[in-house]
Each structure stands twice: as C-alpha cells, then as structure tokens.
Amino acid sequence: MVTVQMSPEVQRVLGPDGMSQASREAQHADCAACTKRITGRANVVVTGADVMRVQVWFAHPGCMPSTVTELREPSRNPTDGMRMSSLPPLPGGHGRAVLVAELETPHFFADTPETELTDVLAPYLLRQGFVPVNDTATAPPLVERWLAVPATAPGIEVGGSLLTVLDDNAEAFFTGQVFTPARWRRAALESGECTLYYGPTKLDPASRDFPAQNRLLEAATRDGRLLAARVPCMDRATLRDAAASE
Ligand SMILES: [Zn+2]
Image (cartoon, rainbow, N blue to C red; front, side):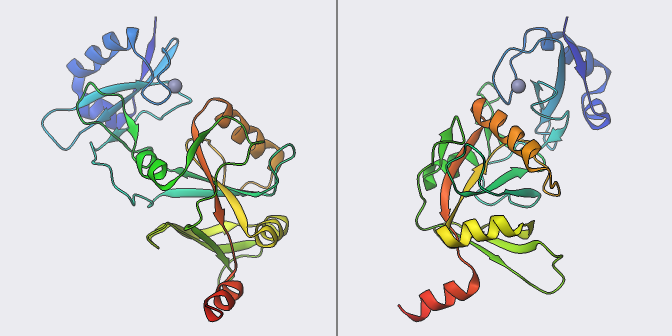
C-alpha cells in the first residue's frame, strides 16, 4: 500500500476528487525523477497548474518534493533559483575542484502527458557536451568554450566568491555568490579547470562539512542522477592577460 503525501498547494489544485484519484494511481506508479517503482510513500507532483488540465506525477520522497510546477517548454536559462556548492578536490576523485549545481525546484517538461518527465536543463547540457556520470573518480570531458570565473567583490563574505559560469554562447549558466574555500580556489586556478556536476544531490551550499557533501555527491553519481563536464576556470586577472595577449 503506497501512502501519498501532498503539499497544501497540491491539495488545493487537485481538490477532493483529484486527491482520491491520485491516491489510487499512486499504487502502481513509477517515480517521475528516477523512474523506479514506488513503494511505501509517494510525493504527488502536479504540472500544468496554469491550464485547464493538470497532470499528476509521483516521486519518491527523496527524489522530489510534493509541489505544483508549470508545464514548461525546455528553456536554456532557468537558472533563477539554482544552488551552487563547491568542494575541494575529492578524496578518491579525479583531482579537480568541484562545483555542484542543482535547481531549487526541479523543473520538468513533457511533450505529452504520457512521456517521461525530462529535467528542463538536461537536453541543453547534453548538447553542450556534458555527459551522464556514474562515479567521481573518472574525469568527465572538457567543455572548452565554457568558462567559470570566481571573483572577489565588495560585500562578498570571506571565503566566498562571486562566481560566473558562462556557456559556449557566453550566456550565464550561473551567476551568484558561492562559498569557495582556499583549497578550492587554489586547485581550480592552478589547474585552470574545475568539474561541474548538475542534478539533484541535496548538497548544502553553506556547508563546510566536505566529507558529508562528498558522500551526497557520490551517492548521486552512483544513482546516475548527474551530468558533468570539466569547465575552464580562471580569475579575472588571468582572463585580462589572456585577452590582452590575443
Ligand atoms: Zn525516485
């Protein structure tokens, strides 16, 4: 017997009939995020709340919150609400400083209600050269035309950087304040690259507990939930020198 969990927002959108229908459908549902069969508890996710028809999906409690999201077209830049965590080179990892990006609220799109939900950024990242990864020991491919620039700026707390990550159209994949400990900055700037992971990990950008963060990252890679690529990384001074010598 699968027990459904619905946020107040989901309950409002579905109403009593929709809620009981969702409870029935949850008994034989696959997770919208990881596609595995759900047993025990299921979070109810609703898409398309702004139109007359809504679609109900189910997810493991650890995979997705119970939420209402719009049915969205794939968009290249839904980076509002993106969380970025950093980790110094991982023990047993491939030696690069690590960035981990995750959307605050997962956004999915579906061409038809029957199709599997696809993470809104995944097709874009795959086109850009990111690949699915299954461990953190293997270096993913380099996306040469991307660029990560950590900068110090007034108002940024100690140990933090204003980080900008640009894609190969020089459009911002991410810009915001990121905790970048000295070991992270040294490793990234000396090697001139860092590894960027994207996907649901539940890392905490404010955490200083790198072993715990590392375990979350490794669990996510083992589950095949992440895409990754190596991204060139330089500070502003190096960027200026490179521009001047061209
Ligand atoms: Zn799942």
